[in-house]
Amino acid sequence: MSEETSDTSASNEVESNEVGHNSCTLRTKTTTVDVMAAIKSIESKTIYLVGKKHTLTVATMKNGFTVVETSSCVNASEYDQALGEEINTRKIVSKVFFLLGYELQTQTFEAKDPLTKRDSIISVQNTLLSAVGSDSLTDKELMDAIEILSSIFGDSCESTYQDRARSEEERVSSDLAGLDSFINSDYFSDVTAVEQLRLVSQHKAMKTYVSILRVRIANFTVSQ
Image (cartoon, rainbow, N blue to C red):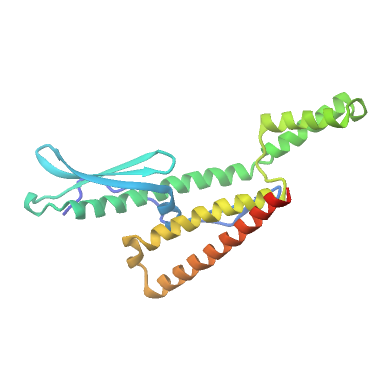
């Protein structure tokens, strides 16, 4: 089978150093696991275009965005939908790498901005205190004002270790689901036997880590 649609070139890995700002850490590496985790489902069917059979494959991302690819073959008697889906899926994975790489670059750029949302909150809070004077406000009035400002501007950093634990559990659980999908996919056979063992070991370690985080979080709720 030969492809009639042009392939989308994209880097299969985006990698640089971690960027930290105000105690927040941004991961700056996109991997195959990230790509598989971002894809919710992939569907294919045979369609007819200009009198020829084509395989149409649609990948739906977890955020609802769709990526579409098609392929066909020169000799109609050799048409194979399964092979067409395999070709399309590889092209889709390449596109998703590109999209996640762009998203990651945007996050990295924003993380380097000297004025973050949290800086904005602190700046406005200080302006409020300077203008009104802390002695003119009761503790409750001051806390209410800060809460209102925080709700308006948002907060890009977790304020407590409990928030960070919850965020970590959510992130690692998502990564674990992606790794689980990858291990159970056809792509897993493309890596070496040694790498397969490493990935399985990583999966077990991540599963244990998530379990520990969930126990900690459950205790947070009890203690509160």
